[in-house]
Length: 473
Ligand SMILES: *Cc1c(COP(=O)(O)O)cnc(C)c1O
Image (cartoon, rainbow, N blue to C red; front, top):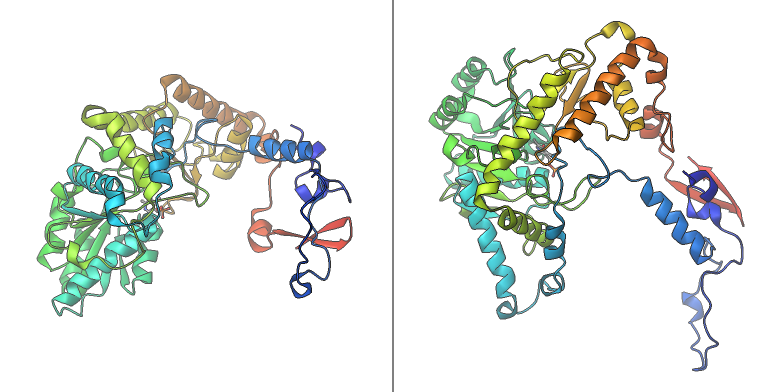
């Protein structure tokens, strides 16, 4: 494409004195801007004509990759299609133009939506109450853990300051526990990828009176369904702790089972993942926290007003437009699609834990390790073929993790296209490994130096002399 022609930064396109507007002569007289408010020097703003600006930003936007442009198998992120009707609903002016300080009688419709969404989530999860205050999954984890902490302290039980987290957990779990001032105890996974109940028994026997909660993800970060939850919940409840469910990845559970029925007491849901809001890159999120009856009085104050309201509107539109029968298909179809890809590729990619997965699964790089082609190289080469890369080097349980989550909306043709390309890359790794190792070849920017990009990011331009712009590190 023409990025080179049009420049990467609007500042590079600037020509001194060029204007993008013309205004008629002012016939109203003018108003002197007080001297102390004026700049000493003119601001170094880019000077461009309108068409150059339009082309610049349109071309930049064409470099964007999104669910609407191509397949996005980013494991643990549920980058699923977001139906357009949700956007229309969230943009309804009656809701969009609400002000949080409006008198209550003028916002009854908006409040009704909160109640109806809460009811739906209770029905889907088996819990009794939800708060919509948290702005993201990790914020939900913190809110949930603070709820649990408040509960223990309300009973005068100050000793419960430890949280058990499986070694396969999402990184946000131990991070949220630490932010909440709790200590993390790691419980091991067995060779089959699920929580080691014997290791857990040992922990509970030794430190039971200090356990505030156990945090679990189910299906876990390997995409595996934890089958011992009832036994685990018993262990934790018997020692006085609560069960926390990281429901960021609720997608495969939709229509299949409910955390409340499994013995979980507190959970969060990532509305932006499972209930379809375009997210990623720090986009809008909502991490409502659900609790069993009685625990709602311990919700902490974590944000003002009603949370990220537009995300809630999208979630409710999504639930209504699918309806009970279609919602039941979400989890099973996501699971079917993931297993289809896994089975179609496991002869060329290393599958460390075989068996049925849920909505996602993890390969440990290419099966043939002799080529020297890494997971990073495979991910980069996928970009040349027009696919978003899967999640790589996470989870940390394997050296060459490559984590794929297709989601339920992808057609068989899309999945077959992706499978064919993954097989093609495995073939290239044998016949022309250097080509794969230097990928991507067809993107506007080639392979970047990850270390340099992380340690010395160049994020500003500084004007050295007028019209002479240069990069500063
Ligand atoms: C995505 C995810 C999170 C974090 O959610 P954010 O909205 O990014 O804060 C937490 N746990 C799991 C299992 C996730 O997949």
